[in-house]
Image 1 (cartoon, rainbow, N blue to C red):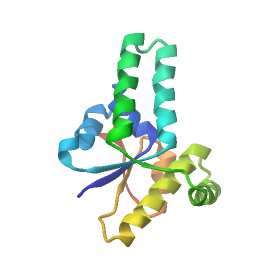
Image 2: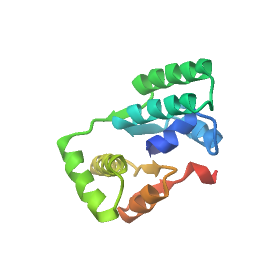
Image 3: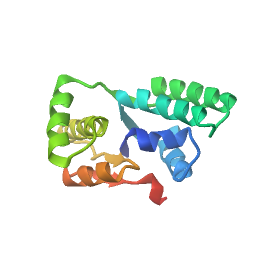
Image 4: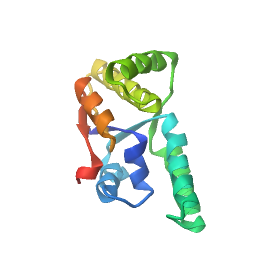
Length: 153
């Protein structure tokens, strides 16, 4: 069974129409049976992305409300939310130092690496880190993760 770890830059594409939206929507479609993992902080980041788009005039208040309603529903039912534990924070600090990542990107990568390790220990297939952030993609590759960029689809 396919497994994906979506960072905020990629997951937001499911709710805000932009390059990669159709591809992301296809992967996340529940009928595919794929496991979709997200770090708990992704909830805050996606809501913030929609709010910023509204504030900047890129979407209407009605569209923003619909996007947020759908996101809250999906967040509670379709995604496997990875808690940001002390272990993930420790790993994130090391990853931030190693790869010169922004703080939340380091947390996203730490959660992806930790989730991949847990899946591997159970004999499950590796997950693929999905991100539209080039620095995070490079760091994910360096950490041995499979990666993909929705902006290339």
